[in-house]
Amino acid sequence: MNVFIVGGSGKVARGLARLLSEGGHAVRSLHRKPEQARDLAALGAMPVQGDLTEISVKALATLMTGSDAVVFSAGGGGAGAEVTNAIDGRGLELAVAAAQGAGIRRFLLVSAFPDALRGGERNPGFENYARVKKLADAHLVASDLDWVILRPGTLKDEPGTGHVHAAAAIPYGTVPRDDVAATLAAIIERPDVSRTIIELTSGDTPIDEALARIARR
Image 1 (spheres, rainbow, N blue to C red):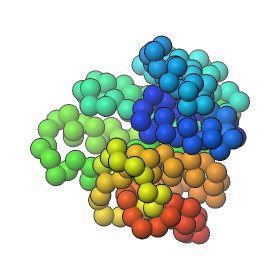
Image 2: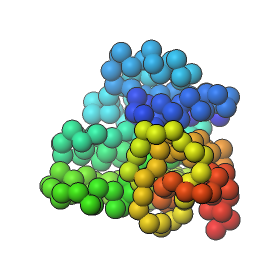
Image 3: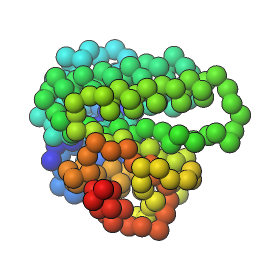
């Protein structure tokens, strides 16, 4: 399968590129900075340079052409409301339109757990982030694409376990980035997991088993 990753330089996206490449899939990873290309290539991905804040729908569709699936894992990374709006918001809308223009049906979005950071200090930047992420989810759900929205809990850099808690609605928790990447890779290989929102934290269920339960529903 040919997979196009938007936001390819992020930690989850890099883990996903490595897993997909090791699994025999062809991966193209969109990145902004030229110096990121070498690391992406080392993971087995084909680096594709582009800036979501500058590229047109038509140009992005051209880069995506030939892909079987798109994974949107881009984010502003706490750089401020303007960047969040441009990447998490308008960037997602642009990628959806580009996928449609390129004739790609399968679209996976890495979103945010509804309770993420709610225990911390409330501030306008976070409230804007939560609003933009919810609107991005709604935009994708309203599209005609074969979408899956993954909402991981607070991300951790500790090694993954391959075991998760995944369902449409679960209590808030944390999850290693490795397990988020592994879940995305497994979803790509499961076309029966479709048009659903999945909340994800660490748990006791093997990833494949958790996705099989979701598919049966």
